[in-house]
Length: 286
DNA sequence: GCCCAGGAGTGTG
DNA sequence: CACACTCATGGG
Image 1 (cartoon, rainbow, N blue to C red):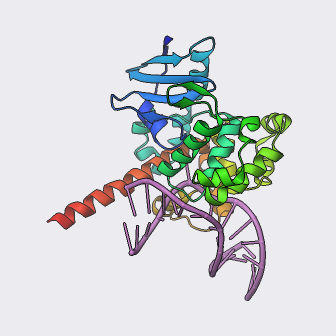
Image 2: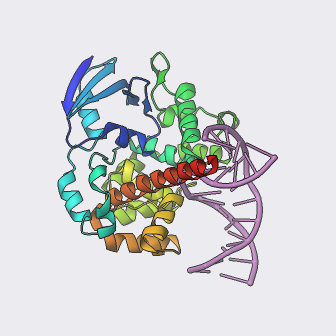
Image 3: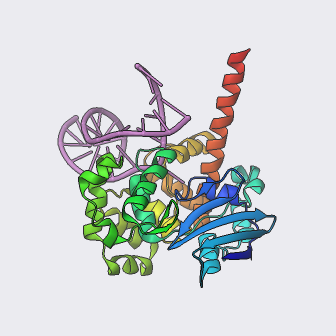
């Protein structure tokens, strides 16, 4: 089923390729393929228009893509607020098309528990492994992310076989602990209580809780601090110290849209590191 | 071969 | 509060 939607501003490559979600892949022709619920979806950007194709297709496909891209966010308003920070204002215009994504809560929780101490290619491989082994087949080579019931069938040994390592026991424990009401209670909870509830879960610390709050539960005030954000805060703001200290700094500086600030800083820092690396290798060639 | 990764859990000073 | 150590492994 083909469909077409319009989203502005939007940079699909930035949004789907900057490491927020581990389920979308860029095809050789520049389009993106991913799974939303039980739909395999291809997206191709033509200026402000997004040309999409869904298999098997059906009602609500457009809506699920609009939800993924958080089209209700007023990017202009968010950027005006964040531009009050001179450091952030510097390179922010080119980030205009980078949108926070809205992921399924359960998928997001499991994905970011797997994301601890692993690089992005490996995380993608682990998440893909859960899909192909425990999800439902949608199309050739495409599987839905397994729900609690499906993932509960996995043994710790099987999960380790998929390369999860010590993360396997956390996935097992989460399958036991999380039920239907847990996530809906979380959804209704105010941010700080949601955060505390998430941190009580096995395999979930402050950083994962903040990622799940942001990408899974859509709390834009959340500010996950990983190694890249730590570097960015040290390099650009001369801020170092504990997670709590850095988090307090970010809240005061970026306020209710800290999540967008975080994603800008994250992407910027990774690009900066890559430029440094290129400059270094060029220098060595001489 | 070596370094590092969208960290968490636990124990100690 | 701050560190220190372990966990388990694969990608670049």
